[in-house]
Amino acid sequence: MFKKLFAPTDMTVGSVWKSIVIFTLPMLIGNIAQQLYSTVDTIVVGQYAQNGDNAIAAVGSALPILNMLLVLFIGISAGAGVMVSQYFGAKKREELSWTVGNCITVTAIACVGLIVIASPLIRPVLVMLNTPDSILESCYNYLMISLVGMAGMAYYNILSGILRGLGDSVSALLYLLVATVINIVLDIYFVAALHMDVAGVALATVIAQFISSVLCLIKLARMREHFDFGWRFMKPQAHFVKTLIKLGLPSGATQAIMASAMIVVQSLTNCFGEQFIAANVVIMRVDGFAMMPNFSFGMALTTFAGQNVGAGKYDRVKKGALQGTLMAVGCSTVITGAILLFGKSLMAVFTETQALVDLSYDLMKILAVGYIAVAVTQSLSGIMRGAGDTMTPMWISLISTVLIRVPLAYGISYLTRTPELPFGQSICIQVSLLSCWVLGAVLTVIFYRFGKWKNKKVA
Image (cartoon, rainbow, N blue to C red):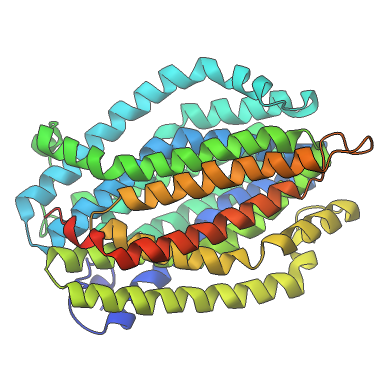
């Protein structure tokens, strides 16, 4: 029984909703654990750093840039997950072996290239984004440490994506839980004991994710009953690298678009001062947990669709889309209610400043209902990606984020300017994000119903 728990799962047979739930639960726990990385970072610097509120603001200002640095690996992970799930569903051992090996090689090349290119650009970008002088140096230290340790973050994302593509969401969960405990312990030690402040939480995260990536690599090396693992398969092969890029580029581009929009909006956010920046960080921490069921169902449905498309079972894919979306919407509805009822208590975990708690809660109420819309977007986008259609979700993100969110945020800011509010109403940030989420859900439903994703099979 224990061995079966950590073995790849064939999602082409059995009850549809049970397959989705059983696969989703470990990922949900894992996503919650991963969210603890940044949440514990925020709590620790908020409680133990010399200037807690400014430290929170520093971490928050750094995150949009860090997300931009990670988009390349998110794209590789997405492409790998689609290829692995479809080759696994089609029982193609040779192709599966080359896919895993080439993913490892491409990730290594990408890590080196990113460090070389990004290192000299971080400080100029922070200055360009109007980062307040009081937090600029802390932001810079956080980003440089994260960049140097990027390999650990990158390989965990890639290797855990491969494990999920094989239907094994439990192993990735176990390794992430181990890393989360290590991260929490190191956070407290580096910040509370060594007084390293923001640099300490960055270093703790890098060490913890490096450990989790090593554990994932060891697990894959032991799965020889399903594919071959060795140096021979790490030699780049044009077909597999090209397919990986073709499938991963749209997902990576989607994340890049969103990260770019966050950076542009962050520039506007920085204009409202340190307290508003800190409030947005607190919101993002609560938001991260609220989004976890949506992301988990989305990833589960990607694997579910990939395996069943690989096996040619399209009727089963449609059933999974309906049942998975309904379950995701149900979870998000419950979470929205909890945020509205207990939001202030959640915000108070991060700071003792009552004005910051009140501001964070007021802004969070604007976003709460949007989680239901995101549940629809993530679920149906997961189906399309798993089937091999990674372009449609990318275009939807492009339209809703670039053409709606960014112009709307700056438009509301401009139209609400007064002598007392030279940058306008700060709620422009949350109103624009909510509008982006709702439009994204509407467009996703429309394009899913068109059904072009059925013609994008890889395996």
